[in-house]
Length: 290
Image (cartoon, rainbow, N blue to C red; front, side, top):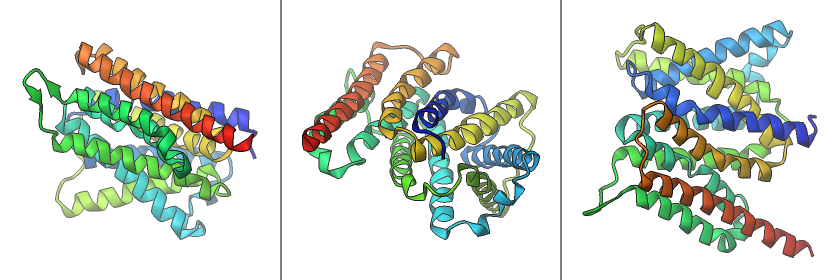
């Protein structure tokens, strides 16, 4: 078992990799959300399979040896989250969809321990105020789009997965590589049935897909899985508050989003709400132990 300190540091790598996911994915304009998800997980599976083969652990790709509950929950969570997230980025303003998705650190802080909900509620309200501000225009609130709804659904799916993942602490993180293949296979089957093949997107966009599959999909999920199972989950939750800031800044720097006071304030409120919720929850825990 990996000591808690190193496991936490490894888990933090996932946060850095995920910060670049929005920027990478919006650059792949030739494919829809399902095509991008399928290709990304296919790359993650192939890269992971080569790694397991090189280290003599190719048998870990056999998902039949894994608990059915783990296979079903992991496949639906990983596939469902990314399908929703990519759909959100394609049907709502990129920075707005990205920030709504990054409510998941706040939701984890609020929902990880239901006995602390009242303590964490003020932080949650501040965070959701930040999201509401995204929809505000001088003439009033704009109507949320399906993209905003998809981003919120993605945040909920990832929150549920992260909270419940500790139940499978005995399963090695490398077992997720087989799940990557299962998700890619399922996505490919749906594409084939719908008559939407994976055509060549061009060399530049293909390189972006390769980067997504190896980084934010492959390495990031393995790192997050190990960190949430064997590291300091609370500290990882705090570090995750930096994700919306880093991700939004990358979108702005690469020209995929425009900087505005409203966006900056919304981002600050989401991060502040998450931090407040975490601090309140910890104070409740410390008080209960004293």
